[in-house]
Every structure is written in structure tokens, then in C-alpha cells.
Image (tube, rainbow, N blue to C red; front, side):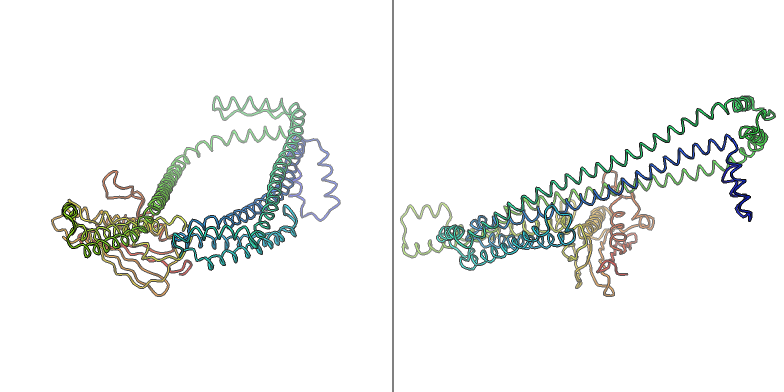
Length: 618
């Protein structure tokens, strides 16, 4: 009997004193099983207790160290943001000089300056909030940080008022080239006088003080990292010590008990080996003792008698096991398919992200030189008109120019040049406007800075996608032009993931263009290839976007598998079969909407997208 067996037998006994006396007798009785149980129970208890203690103590100090580390990092981020924004604000006068006489660059610099002032005020608010939430965990005193934030706020406000006063006094965008040097000299003089000198001196002192606080925050983070490592080390040491003690207890018990049970178990082992070798289930192990080993021998003899019965039953159950294995294999195959689908989706998402980054980078690089060209064309046109007007005045004063001038006029074809030059400039301006429109569409389509939910104009996303696909919509030697018919409704701003939604538009419109191009060889093809886009509001809670083409349409079999992963009707190497699957996931899972397709052979195809105006609506 064991302690567990004793309590199960006598738990309902009403004779409490007799039960206690009987328990003491049984505990004093030298049984191998009891000794092994007590010894290994103690070893396991020590291991569990030590491990639990190590985990509890280590986790406590680990959480404390992690908290200090998080606070130190947050403190560094806020202070670093404060330092960065004040540097940007203080560098405004140097950048302002470069914008004198240029309205576009002045507006840009003024907007940037005000944005940095706003970001600095937000950083000051964040610092005050952080100090209020963690007054006892700071790299310095809360009073010092509050004083720094107040002095920054007061001086930046004075700095902003001084800058805005200078804007109003000098009016930099309206300066002429002749007055720019004097205005720049006035700015330099003003920066060396009060109150600007006082503000700069105070900001410099604050910068030094903030630098010391930043160094203290970095030291605080180093201390937090050391405490985190110490907590990990303490936990490991406690656990290892408990394991060593448990191993020593188990080894001592093993040496003690092995001698008492080795011989009886060896006899049982010999019989077991013979039964296993000869498959003779009529053999019986000798019962040499009355302790647990003797009970083991009796149980082993009963086991031998049941093996024959279980062997026969095992053969019967083998067929069932094979069926279960087959079912499990199918489940694993389904899981593998799901993993492959997920991997393909991740690859597609990474491709779209890389494409967005490439598009945004190209748009940014093109935008700057185009802006310079576009801005100078107006001045060039004005200068040329002045020159032509001056030429007319010369011709009016000198009706009969010398023969050399007349010959030069005939050589350069002056009447044609005067007529064609304004047209040439106008065509250059139209080309620059076209490039700017394309760049704006590329930047709008990429939307790398709008990964989160944001209210956007759906029509803007559609137009940007169409602009990118404009080259495929134009007429080619082997394909006629594709018309795009728009029926835009009055839509509100829609809360959505703009970049992902543009990806859906790109997939659907690309498939529509591919379908119309493939219709070229059909004898019944519509000579006018068209894509119709229609938008509307549904029930004041959802919007609908219909994208239809007059292409060859789809069979019911293709339409049924349209949104399945890896399904494509395009030739090998032309498509992955993941575009419509990912589009369906974006609409249904990320936006809580629906994506349906209506199509019949020879009747074209229409995709209907429905999404809520605000996420969370039913």
C-alpha cells in the first residue's frame, strides 16, 4: 500500500485515531516501492521547488529590470525627439536665406518650420506626460525635466514669434534679386541682436542640459540591461542548484535500492527475455519475495497470459490504425497546402511592398528636376515674349534694315520662328505638366506612408491606378486602344488600407486588360474595347465599386475557382494565380467587405467590390 492508496481506502472512515495509527504502521514498514517513492518524490519535490523558486524570483527581478529598460528607452526616445526638433528649428534662419525671392521654396520652408514647432510641442507634451507617469524612474529629477520642458516651450514660443515677425517685416517671397542681399544682411544682423541673442544663448544652455540628461538616460539603460542579465543569471543559478541536489538524491537512492531489487528483477528479466525471444507465452516468472518485486512477478505472469489475447486483438486493430494514419496524412497534406498558400501570399505581399518602395523612390527622384523645369518655363515664356516685343519695336523703328540683317532673317526664317517659338514653349509646359501628373499618380499609388487605416478618396486611388496602366490602355500596332468609361458617384472619404485597396484595383484592371487583349483573335470580338468603372453609396454605410469589361467572359468552372490560390488561366510564366486570391483576402478579411464576380462566356466580366465607409460597421 502507498500513501495514496491509504487515503483512498480510509478517507470516509469515522475512526480518526485508528486511521492515524494504521498510517504510522504502514509508513514504518520497509517497502521498496515506498522507499523509492519517498526518495524520488523528495528529489522531484526539490527540483520542482527550486525550479519554481528560480522562476518566481527570476521573473520578479526580470520584470522589474524590463520595466526599467522600457522606461529608459522611452525616456531616450522622447528626449532625442526633443533634441532633434530644436536643432531643426534653430537651423531655420540659415535655410530661410536660400528661399528669398522664391515663393515655392519659402512656402515649403515655412511649412517645415511650423511642422517642426508642432512636433517639438508634441514632444514637450509627451515629456510632461512621461514625467507625470514615471516620477520616480527618471534619469534625473522630475523637477529638472519639467523645468527643461517649460524653458523649451517658452523659448521656442519666443523663437517662433521672432521668426514670424521677420516673415511679416521682410516678406521673403516677394523680394527681388536686387533686394535679396540686403534682406539676407538684415537677417544676419537681426540674429546677432536681442532678443535673438538671448534666445540662442538660452537654447544652447538647454541643449547642454538636455545632453547631460540624455547621457544619464543612456547610463540608466545600461544599468537596466545589467539588472536584466543579473535576473536571468539568478534564475539559472537557482534552477541549476535545485537540479544538482535532486540528481544527488536520486543517485543515492539508486545505489541503495539497486542491491535490494537486483536479483529478483534479474530472474524476472530472464523469463521476459525468453518469452520475447521464443514467443512462448506459457512460461512463468518465479515469485521469490513478497514485496513489490514479488508483486511485479505476479503481475508479469498475468501479463504473459494476456499478451496472446492482446496480440490477436492487435491484428484486428491494425486495420483501424492504418485508416487513422491515412486520415492523419490527409490532414497533414491540407496543412502543407495551407502553408504553401501562406508562403505565396507573403511573397506576393513582399513584391508589392518592394514595388511600392521603388515607385515612391522613382517618383521622388523625378519630381525635383521636373519642378525646376516647370517653374522656369513660365519665366522663359515671359522673357521670350519681352524679346519678341523688343524685336517688333526695332522693326518699327528700322523699316528697312541693312542687307546683312535681312539675309540673316531669311536664313533663320524669322516669321516661322516667331510663330513656332510660343507653341514650342507651350508644348514643353504641357509635357512638364504631364510628367508631374504621372509622378503624383505614382506617389499616390504607392502610399508607403499609409499602411494603417486612413480616410481616403477612392476615386483618387482608381485614377492613380489608371494613370500607371495608361501605357497598356493606349493603342499599339497589334492591339487597339482600350476606352475607360467612368461613372463616379458622390462618395465620402472611406476608411481603408489605401495601399492594399490600390493593389486590388491594380489586379482587377490588369486582368481586364489581359482579357481584352486576348479577345483580339476572336471572330466575334467587340471592335470597341472598353472598361467601365462605376461607384455609388449603398445604404449610407457601404460603398460599391463596379469594374466591368466587354471581354470574352468566363465559363462557370473558371468563375467558381477564380479566387482559389494558385489558379490561373494564363500561360506558364505569365501569372502566379495569387492576384485574385490576395485581392479577395484584402477585401473580405482586412476591410470586412465582399468581392463578387458576374460573368458569362461572351458577355464580359464585372467585379463588384463592397466595403464599409467606416471600419467596424455591419
